[in-house]
Image 1 (cartoon, rainbow, N blue to C red):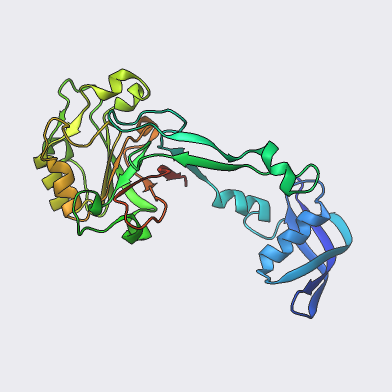
Image 2: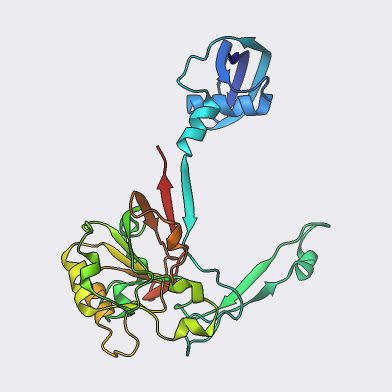
Length: 303
C-alpha cells in the first residue's frame, strides 16, 4: 500500500505593489518524499493565483504522512492537464531546400554572428542574429484568398479562430494508383466546421526529384464538395493541391474564393488518428502577403 505524503509549512509572500500575506500550518499533497522550497513557493503562488509576487518564503517545513485531500496532487493535476500529444506536420526550412521547382531556395545565414557580436556585449556574452531570404511558398505554407484573388484577405487579415485548434479529420488516399483525388473519397466524412487533411503519402518524397513529378491532387469537383460541405480549411501532404498541368487551378480558385485557406506540403499525416484531434497552422502576421510558411501541428488529447 502506498503511503501518501503531504507537506506542512508556513509561508510569507510580499508583493511588488506593497503589502503581503502569511499562512500558518498550510498543507499540500506531494508525490515524493520531499519538495524543494522554491518549487513549493511556486506551487503556492500558482495554486492561489497570486499576481505581482515579489518574494515567497517557505518557513517551518515538515513532511508528514497523511492521505491526500485532492483527487490528485498538484503535480498529478498538472500532468493530467498535459495529457496530450503534439504531432509536427511541417517540413523543416533550411538553407538550399527546394520546395517548388522554378522558385528559389531559401538562403539562411548570419546577419550578426556570435563572434562578431562579442564587441557589443560583456565578456562571455554573445548573441546570434539570423537572416533568411526566401519566397513565401517555402516549406509547409498556408495560402490565403489573396494568393489567388486581388481583393481577397491576405495573411494578416485571417482570424486566429480559423487557423488554430481546429477540429480536424484525415482523409487517407495512400496506396491508390490514381493520383486524382475526387469528391467520392470525402463522402463518408462529416466535414462541416473541420480542417480536412488529405493524406496521400507523397511527403515521403520530400527533398528528392521524385517529389516534383506526378504528385496527387484534388479535382475541381472535390473542391466544390469540400466548399459545399462546410470545410473550414483544407490541407494536403503533396506538392500542390491542384493539378499543376491545369493553368486554371480550379481547387485554389474554388476554396480560396470561398475564403477557405489551403495548407500545402504537410507531412507526418500517417501519425494522426482519423479524427479526435485538432489542427493548427498559423503564419506570421504579414500584410500584403497571400502565402507564408507555417508551423503546422496536430494536438491529440487523451482521456
